[in-house]
Image (cartoon, rainbow, N blue to C red; front, side, top):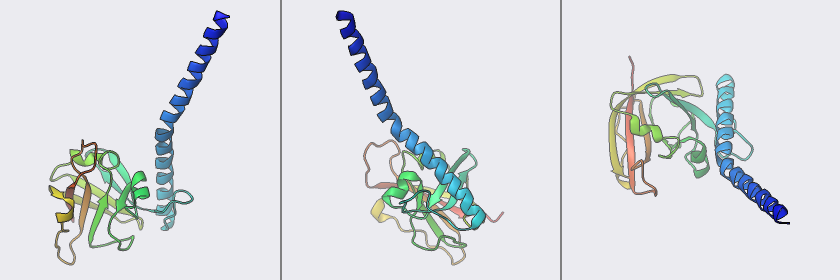
Length: 191
């Protein structure tokens, strides 16, 4: 009787452990599958020139990709900075067209996931940005600053200037969101 009770308790503990393991693994597995799907639809969009949602019900489309050569990092850029979109990637803040040639583009993402790499960049580093029409541009970081979110104004540029702004919450290691934002400004490098 005692052996049966111990066996039953052991089986219950194993079952509980498996349940907790499955719950803990659900989010990382979902993130991995979502990332694979986003990369797949991005590659398809490059071939066809037409973005499509990565899955049914998604309120965003892949419209670009940024790469940080210094860090070997690549991220998909989505056409929206909505809550759902920024769960999955970097979102485009401006509401202008999906394909821009000469303008200021603002990209935002979460400091603890898709934009974590910003803390490792310095003035002079390069950011590559590829648009859905296949155009690839290289930008050079010219300015990094911390601002209160309501106080930041986009840089005033000449009509033909091409500026890329990457932003996230600050400080990088904070547990809760605060009013400060990390702003990285990069200029198109013609060379």
